[in-house]
Length: 117
Image 1: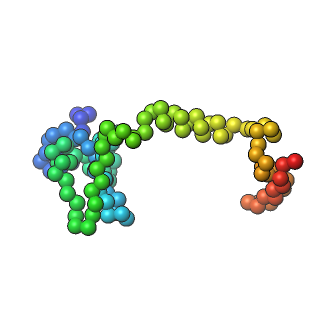
Image 2: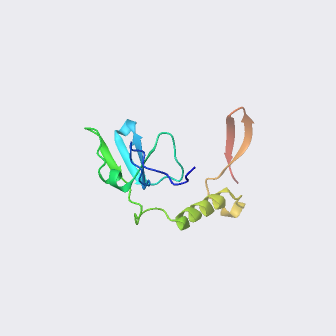
Image 3: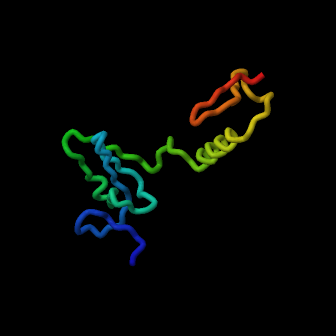
């Protein structure tokens, strides 16, 4: 079995270069970089077929460029992960803002909150 993914178009044996997905609610065809793994509702296309892709009348083709300067780098993702970890850490009373509330009672999904003193 070959690990190389091929173009989804019939009778095309060229290697896949992009992945096509459809957003039916927005009437948009999204053509982006080759997905990490093949999905049942996505289509892998070779360079030639991705360049010639057209959408049905009334639909828009959104082409995502792989070398997009605004794409998120791994540094951006690591910074986001660090920010989430930092937000989850417990804070001392001095670090809390003036409108911090504390839970004093609970019944089911309802909570009684009082301002911190």
